[in-house]
Length: 64
Image (cartoon, rainbow, N blue to C red):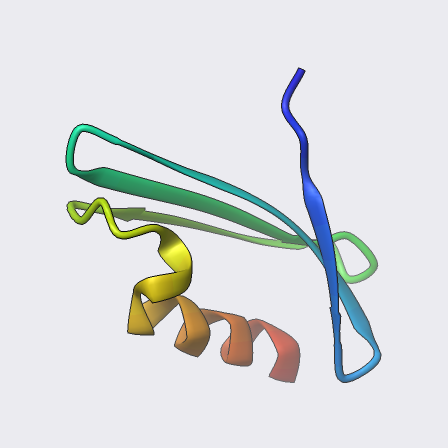
C-alpha cells in the first residue's frame, strides 16, 4: 500500500507522493478540495523536493 503525505500551506491542504529509481524522480500532488492535480516526472534522482520546478508548480497550484 502506498503512503501519501498531506501538507498544509497557506490554508490549503495538498496530498502528495513521490519516489526515485535509477536516475529518475516522480511526484504526484493533489489539491483534492479544488479538484486539481500535478504530476512531475524528472530525469534526476535527487528527489522531487530538490527540484526547483516542483516549488514553482506548487506555488502555481496554490494561486489557482
